[in-house]
Image (cartoon, rainbow, N blue to C red):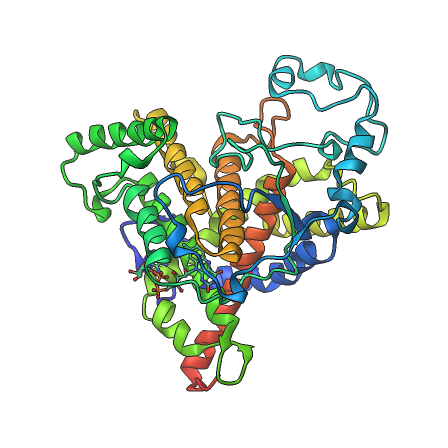
Length: 440
Ligand code: FAD
C-alpha cells in the first residue's frame, strides 16, 4: 500500500495536496466520531430535500434500466407532520412573518448592508431559517438546482432511514451512467455526445463544453490523462474518488443472500478497491479537498442559525460543527486550492469545469435505482458545494460570497461524513486483507 498520495501519482499536484495517507488517517480518527454525530444527532443534517422522482434522464431513455430490488427503494416522507419542524414548509413559512421574506439574489448583491429588506426576522431567526426553494440558480453553482424544470417542490427523506449500501443495482444501466460521467463529462477523452437526444438547452450546454474542449484539443492534440492540466486531473479525481466511496459503502454493507445478513464483504473490497490503489488515492484526495472546503466555512458557521425550534439542539449542533472546523484549522492545511485556475485560460477553464460538473449533476437523473439516485444526488451536490466554496468563496468576505442553500450545507456535511466513513472502512478492510482475516 503506497504510503503517500504524492508517491502514487508523482506528476499530479495532489501533489496538489501532498498529504500522506497516515496524516489523513490520523485526522480522520479525530474527525470521524464528530462528523457521525453532526450528521446523525440532529434534525437539520439528518434529513434532506431533493427531486427524486420527477425529473427524467435528459440524456437517454432509461426506462429499461430501472432497479426493481427492494433494496433500491427509498422511504420518502409524504406527510408534513412526519417531518421535524426544521424541514416543515408550514413552520418555516410562519418564520417569514407577514412581510419578511428571503431577499432575492439580486437584492442581496445590490444592497447587502441594508438587510433585512422587508420586515424583521427576529433575534434568533437567521436568513437560513427562511423557507428556501432550490429553484433560484446562481451562476457560481456547480450543480443544477434540484427543482430545475419541475413544478413539484421536492421529496423529503430521512437519510438515517435510507442508508447508502448495497442495492444490487448493476449491469448496463449503472455502467451507462458511470461511462457517461467519465467519457462525456470528464476532460480525459474526446467524445461524440448523444446530443440529438438532448433538449435544446442541454444541447447548448454540452455543445459549449465540447467547443471549449475542442479549443483545448487544437492546442494540445489528443491529450492523454497524464498530460492533462492540473484542473482536469482534479475533476477526474473528484469523480473517481466519489465512485470509490460509493464502492466502499456497498462493500461495507453488503447483502449476503446466503445468510440474509448485511456485512462487510472483503472480496468485494479487493476487487473494486484494493487491487486499484489509484481509486483509493482518489478517495483520500476527496477527503483532503472536502476537508479544506469545510474548514473555510468556519466563520460562516459561527453565525449560522439552525432554527430547529429546539435551541438546545441548535447549540449542540453548532458546537460540534465548530469543534470540527477548529480541529481542521489546528492541523497543517492538506489541500491548497490556490494552485488551480491560475494561468491565462483560468476563467474559461473554470467555466468549463463548472459546466461539466453540472452535467454530472444532471446525469444523476439517469440512475435507475432510487436509493442510489438519492445518495448520488446528495454526493454530487456535496462535491459541487465544496467546489463552490473552494473556488468562489472568500472566508473573510461576508458580502460577495455566493449563497449557500440549506440543502447544499446538508449535502456537504453528509458527503464529508460519507468519505470519512469510507476512509475508516478502507482502513478496516486493509487490516483484514493484511492479517489474512478475509472470512468476513
Ligand atoms: P462499476 O462500479 O459499475 O464501474 C464501472 C467501471 O468503471 C469499472 O469497470 C471500472 O473500469 C471503472 N471504475 C470503477 N471504479 C472506479 C473508480 N473509483 N475510479 C475510476 N474508474 C472506476 N450500487 C449499490 O449497490 N449501492 C449504491 O448506493 C450505488 N450507488 C450508485 C450511485 C451511482 C451514481 C451509480 C452510477 C451507481 C451506483 N451503484 C450503487 C452501482 C455501483 O456503482 C456499480 O455500478 C455496480 O455495483 C456494478 O459494479 P461493477 O463492478 O460492474 O463496476
